[in-house]
Image (cartoon, rainbow, N blue to C red; front, side, top):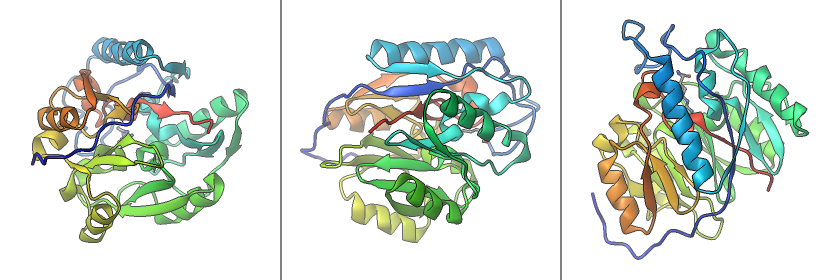
Length: 280
Ligand code: ARG
């Protein structure tokens, strides 16, 4: 679905990320369609892929903080779910599934210990997995994990306009599996998304707000290619997302392929492993 376009990437800006090494990674329960307990996981391979991802961020000039992994929380590697941070203010996560619930307080404690103002959520929300800042708005997913009531709570706590988006395909259960923020520049916000993952009304909303968005193909989506991390120029993306990479190049972005296939067994990719700490 390649379209000619004159738009170009706004340029890289240095980021600060929080990550959690997958020391205790495995698939011991199933809370999304990618997870299959009968399929073996290789923790060392997950650690190696995670370290490569961290090193790529460092090579790109970003800062990476790490949180201590906790035994018994195999999904803690998916740091994006840990909170949503804007202007140094932290809106904590409150997980839907009991298996992940202890992660919310663990991430909130990390932020409190590092001098951030934190707000404990009353409503169920899975952090940046479902809340993506694009320019001046917070795109907020619902349908599988985050409750709609959390959208309003996030808007209040983070002092931002919220646009709710409904997810309809269980494979794309978090917003960050169906939509990638390419540019968060308020003057030129840009996203890529997979249209079939959204309800008709949400698709219409995305078309209206982002008429020039990159539309991902089924191939891109199936390898969780939309679970990508952009710094405004470099886009860390699953190597399987070949159509997306081509479209990114056409718009002046630089795709940086990083293999996260071991972590895909838990239903996550690069973005899931990366929580952006925004001080502004
Ligand atoms: N196994 C985890 C879950 O189902 C994967 C989370 C992926 N994280 C994300 N930001 N999409 O909750």
